[in-house]
Amino acid sequence: MTSGEKTGWVLDALSVGDVSAAHHYHSLLDRDRLSVLGSLDPEILARATDLIKTSRETEFRKSEARSLEIAWGAVRTPVYLVDERLIEENMRVLRYVKDRTGCRILHALKAYASFATFGVMTPYLDGVCASGLYEARLGREEFGKEVHTFGAAYKKDEIRGILKYSDFIIFNSFHQAAMYADRARGMGRSTGIRVNPGHSEIATAMYNPCAPCSRLGVLHDTFAREFPAHVRKIDGLHFHAMCEQNSDVLERILRSFEELYGPYLNGLAWVNFGGGHHITRPDYDIEKLIALIDGFQSTYGAQVYLEPGEASVYDCGVLISTVIDVVKNDIDIAILDTSAEAHMPDVLLMPYRPDVIGSAGPGIKEYTFRLAGPSCLAGDVIGDYSFDEPLERGDRLVFTDMALYSIVKNTTFNGIGLPDIAVIRKNGDLDVVKRFGYKDYRNRQS
Ligand SMILES: Cc1ncc(COP(=O)(O)O)c(C=O)c1O
Image 1 (cartoon, rainbow, N blue to C red):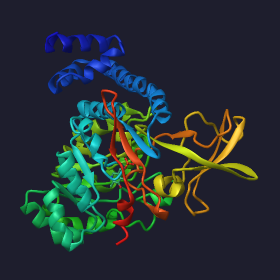
Image 2 (spheres, rainbow, N blue to C red):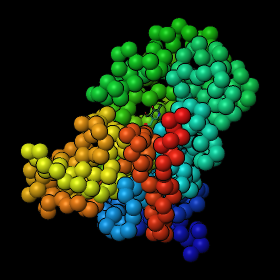
Image 3 (cartoon, rainbow, N blue to C red):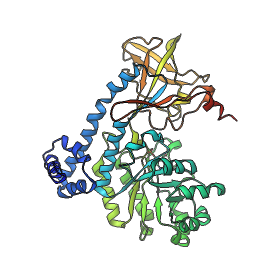
């Protein structure tokens, strides 16, 4: 098939709701995808979005069997197992949003920075967002596209490196902008200010950047007072106010943001809507997101950026662990070779309960076990789970959705070894890309 014939075929197949069209859509050249979208009317476009989501879910449904097969094979545990095919599926959904809107999407390195899989991410995204010098450098050296850096406060001895590795730098105060913006612009960097959009819906204060007394983002009163004096130093605005949320929350945040900052947007080059958009989650309303971005870009003429982290690798990795021992103290307790404290710290911090393949909540299946880590921390407990069969020493357990905010946050507390990192490549090969040892623990102590 010529590329013209293929484009025509995808157009027809999308129009009649053929699910295989989504897969072929992703393999078209940039200009052909845009020409397909440009030829579809709004009703069919909405149907195309459903097909794109269905296509992703079809691939994800196959992944559980793949993870279980590897878990019960020869793989050494504990191991984070990341699946490239799944990451690519998520990337395709993100690029579809870009195709529909012309927005630009960055991957937030803070959520996931395992560069062994960047090969399936870089073709789809515009770059990364970084939280400081090291992430900016990793982004530049391993991702290789745009690097946008936001830090709550930049140290004088780091700014040189940050400006070297970043294309965009976002300041958290006008004082920091006054210190560094001229230098940044002199190096051809784009500059921005992070603002507090005045609305957020995150219940846990710890994760709410707009909670009372938050240090993150300039408040509107300060902005109104100081922006006029700095207007020539600033190219764009940034806000981040979401966590694992849907586009209806973004709609309400935007309403507040536009009310507070709309009058200042004229002439600004870009606005960054931050992260926390759970775009690749099956129930996420992509059409609403598209409408919001379209509306914003056409009203203000500013380029919209999104910088999700979780959405990039949502559900793309598992943590495989082995039961080392089983003890009893009123309840049955399985001691694993993986630790909540050291290997999945958000389980204790957020807190949340990860899924274990084949398990249910306590008391639902016949045998209930408390799953706990090997450390000295009494609270190193992942949770209570029930199983069809009693757990035995040597059994393997597969914790799901472990690519995000786990590898980047783990520690060697108690001198517990870090899990290996393994990748299921697109061709199905299993590649153990990193194995840690004693030196990784020792080198962090002195
Ligand atoms: C400034 C900023 N951008 C992006 C993100 C990524 O958010 P998420 O991984 O929830 O999409 C975060 C997360 O804390 C953030 O603070």
